[in-house]
Image 1 (cartoon, rainbow, N blue to C red):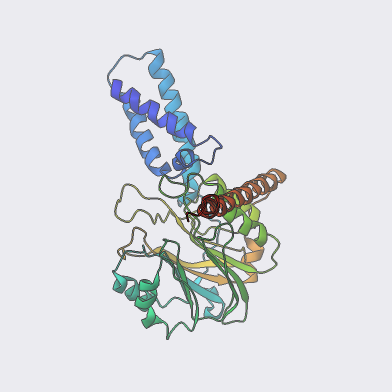
Image 2 (cartoon, rainbow, N blue to C red):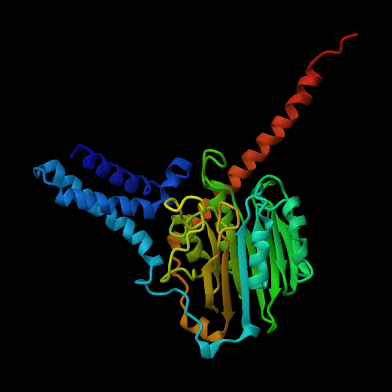
Length: 378
């Protein structure tokens, strides 16, 4: 019985821990494994109910705590199951219009991964209109040269710091910009894409740093970057798509706030999780790779693609724009509290970025100061 009680305390603690509004990675990390916590909680709940042992006050309290924890985890993940109302409509067979469609393939390729042929094969089979690679360096840029003849519009940001990205498009790209929103190490690609019908779509490709012991100590810059983009989008009167490895799960506080601020929809809601990371561990997976879009898009197709040698699975989505979808699909409602929370997170991110930049400048200046302070020896 003692082991069941320990499991119950762990389930309750992890659920409460994730509610603490802190940005440090050891708090934000509890956002990720909600499916795993839910499964663990259900197993613990069954054990508490049916194990043949005396019913004590402690057991009853733990049972109530586990029920509350399981209910909370269900509340967070159920929207990404078929029992929930779909946020994005499925485009019917009688509505299909290729001129209004765009197909997108997003792949975090993992910089040291050299199984280039696996991604190339997927691109050849699916022939997406747009391909976005993340963590791609010069080696990946060279390996993807065979597709360049089919993708005349390209934006290349090859980096060896795990944050390089490459955008390939069959459709015209205009006003392309590579921006470093809050860090000189973390690029993002912003562009206007033109569909075959002539519709202009604003495209944002992102890959912020995750909160982890090996990357960023907290989620402040990640959250701020996402919300800065969301804040810009809310004032756009234009079709819009945000895609990339956001290093955050769909059900996190920040991602849901981003949706309410930007007005963008998530085609996974009412369908399935589409967990993309970690490709090597089937029991430890969650959704890190995302495609959000404005309410004028309906969903034609969406799937997680097979293994490409990376720790992420690629994502493939086909969208179709049309006024009928905009009329029938509702954006998430933004409140004044949402606006205030977003602006506070953005300001905290900007201030943190400024402090980090100043610290780097000061560190670079130290050797020069030391040299100036050391008298010349004759």
